[in-house]
Image 1 (cartoon, rainbow, N blue to C red):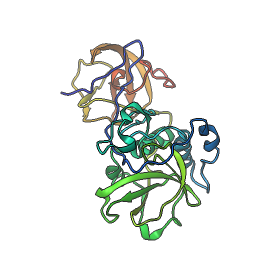
Image 2: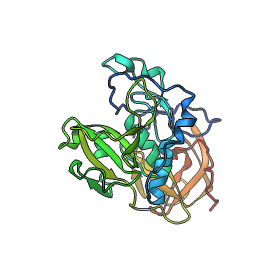
Image 3: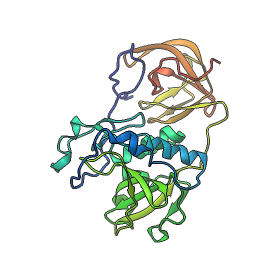
Image 4: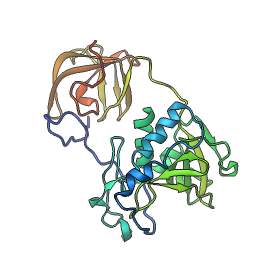
Length: 293
């Protein structure tokens, strides 16, 4: 049974602090926007045509990061992180010292923070995501798209495994993207070039049950129990980090695991089972906004 290491102390809470793997593409350098531009530029970043509330929330989350630096491999569902040094050198050669987002982690952040949608790692995996509610080809252009759709570019547009860049559509031919090392999250014109590979829609799928709050778990092979304790065998196991909808929480058996001790457990109605709050990826041991059972 493997667990992902956790870097924060118990006093700081139970947040999984990891930098996700690299997925963006480092390109030629362009001038970075000044740090003072963030507030001004964010006013231009918004849904530019009508869209469902869930799609608007995805756009709003992406736009909240306008002005944050691009960092190759940087970012998570919680916000900017330090990236990795781009092996090809150039403007990304020192991205391990830059706290920001690459393209795939920006859309991953926007999807999770805006709509509780858990996208996979990597631009190519996001392009092929089985949870997409609609797909659009390059030949269809922008006409069928709505704000919040994800735009794709690949070295071979016919092969989604080649997708190397992804951005969030705003409408009216505009998008918000983490483009390349040396720049900041920005609003750009959509590039309908030879590498444009179409778009996917991520909103409109299964919604959380009424009265629940969505969180992400961490670790692998995490057992869900029939009671708030470990005395009885697991009902099922989560093989990897998984979005879960929590109905309520209660104090149960004290659990000592991964260097932490916590007696808080969350009830997951989808599984009719309980999970120790140690394995909920949140900085609080007692989850905020979740009622007691």
